[in-house]
Image (cartoon, rainbow, N blue to C red; front, side, top):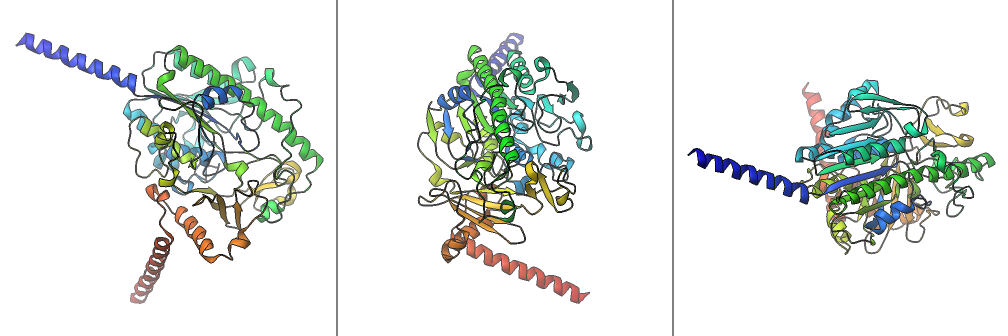
Length: 534
């Protein structure tokens, strides 16, 4: 009997060990590299030659990848939750706007994708910028380590290259201005290297969120003189007055002042220079994974949280706008089952990342995630867009401050982000929602703004990729098409879960609208009855 029990114990131990080993060998690792404000439309991927070679050429490039909101914290919140802005409720970069607020932590962060990976047995590692208000003393300070992360190295506040504080597993780590010790992109690289060299368990998920190419655009000293002859692109909508666009764009100064042009060219070069350190980091990570024999079982994702503009429609520099330069960003992936050197033209967005990570880990994405898993697209060389989605949603909630430093004429005018030449690039009513997509070979963008004019914009992105001509007044002459785009947008701004991709037909949308009107009418009638009974 004792001998039987002994053999039974050995058998169970052997099976458990074999199963554990098989799990670690077959379950893929995931590396996610996220840059900050890196554009695609204006040449933002030109300087990262090694990244394009080591990830793009060895994997798949997605040519139509969009962020669902062109601002840091809302976009990152969408990446973490797999939800649209109207569902994760992080509407801007402020604590009041739910950027890493206690309410967001308690309702959304607890269901972010790292929590599912961690529960599945992944070792999770984070280093870099998390959310703009992370570490705020009113939101837990540095002691708050977001759930789901085994190893945590989170930047307190917004992007910096020197003189910052990290929360290292809940303990403050201060950094100064010594390049060899403190340059933030290199610190992220070193911490990632230490993790990969450690005796960590597999599978692992590693997220590296660099400050590049965000302001203050500080390059590493060895790259300070690179691209000295480069200027911001002068084509497309550069230094063009957006006379047919919403009021915030129309207030820009055209032609731009010389000081704005010089500033734009200077930061354009520095943005490229900061990305060279990211390129070095990508090379190091790929080399480490290769040396350790992990590269063939590791997916490496590369993208940005939003785009950027430098002089387009005479807006000196920022993001936040509805145009392609602010919402169309780089996205490339390499990994198991991906054919090297392939291109995907499907319409995909950053809310698709969370469900993709989960499906790679063999986790069923929760029903409240709005995005679609891209795993089938990664492994397939044939387009699948026709059966999944025809439209994506873009949203932005305008921000403002009472006092505008250096521009007193805009104090208490509900304006925001007024930098070079006091051209304001945001405002309280720079709030909009857009659809991007189309059917039967169409590709367009339709937007509604919540401003005093109830302004609308429409662009045929096939014929007018630079969005120079607003066709909104024209499409109103085609009642059926205009009703189609407005109803589609109305559906998406209220969608949740699978309804964000399963858009009803026009007849179904009209029926749904009528039913909502009936429901609203009955609600008002019941209120009146209750009031009369009182």
